Length: 105
Image (cartoon, rainbow, N blue to C red; front, side, top):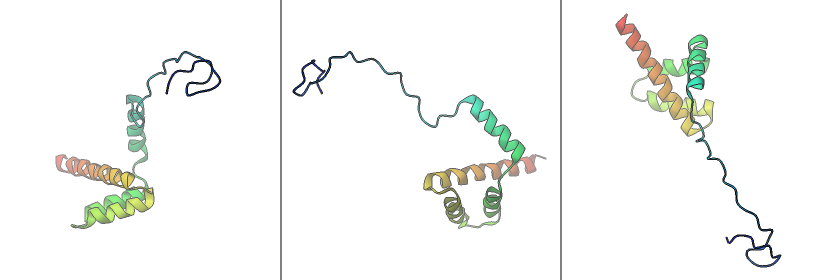
């Protein structure tokens, strides 16, 4: 679209103004250090929520089809495909940390 030329008709109609530069947008969902630290502390203090404990139990006891069952359960609780996959990976990571801690102790 052409710049406004101050004339009331035509493709470039409208008051003539100079465009000003907009500040660059921050990427959405980027977690900074402070937020990450706060979430880690909250997880450490509060532990897992009941549905997360149930997912962890499914992972521990489940066989080959555990991944699919965990995904379906998480999807029902969280409402979206992406969130369910992320939650499943988070809980798997927690399970791996617990197993490593148990093996190391």
